[in-house]
Image 1 (cartoon, helix red, strand yellow):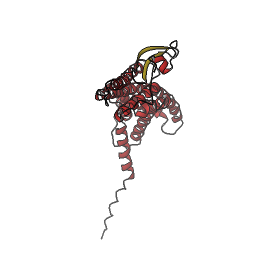
Image 2 (cartoon, rainbow, N blue to C red):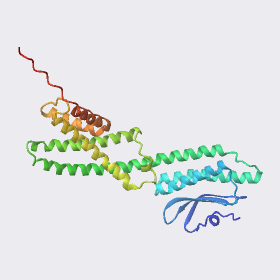
Image 3 (cartoon, rainbow, N blue to C red):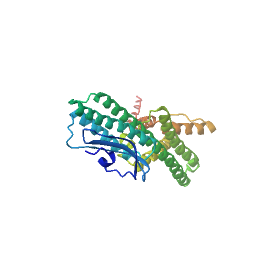
Image 4 (cartoon, rainbow, N blue to C red):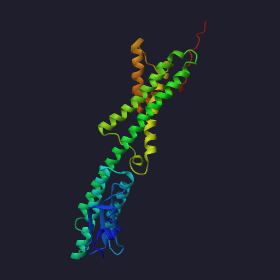
Length: 295
């Protein structure tokens, strides 16, 4: 068996700068954490010979660490999060190989530090999940800002079309204000979630299973949903379907904008308003009082 990590993994010393490495003394195992000179990013490679006998718990932990290393490689193109996640994964796999080597030397049949390595793998998975969420949230926020810009542009065009409708040609400014206020309410909701740590994007959006396109598109749709909610609130007020008294003058304008902001901020509140409106519209009309007979 070779005692050079480069030979065991087939690495070219001229193209790879080793950061950390381990090569088994008794078993054909090797692992290397290195920086690829052309790609300018950290990579992790390891090999475990087929003749190495692994207990079930050791094999399962090694597979978990391997799967995590592939997810890290596909999720983070470069940067600190990639380097740190791979560093932590290297510690887990290298620890497994060291324990296997010690067991081969001493003749033990089990690895004594498996519990510690399992906890280390859990910490690595937890950090990867947090880093993936941060990356996804930044892309989601970028999509939201782009979506808000599109909503404002489309709203301006729609408000021009409202000028051609009879009896409501003077409502175009409020229509546009409600649309933008609803979109801003949606952005505000996401910002509150990010700063409080309560915003959790779906796992499919956070890791390598989804690229940048779907994530940015999902973020762009959020202001659109908020803007539509703001318009719905405005239209229901103007149609007098929602039993709310709107103040006159500037107070009334601010009231409508505030309501559109709330509608974009809280999807639950907007759904509640729509559900209540549906119940009122579908309720049977009260029966007319019978006409008294005159004898």
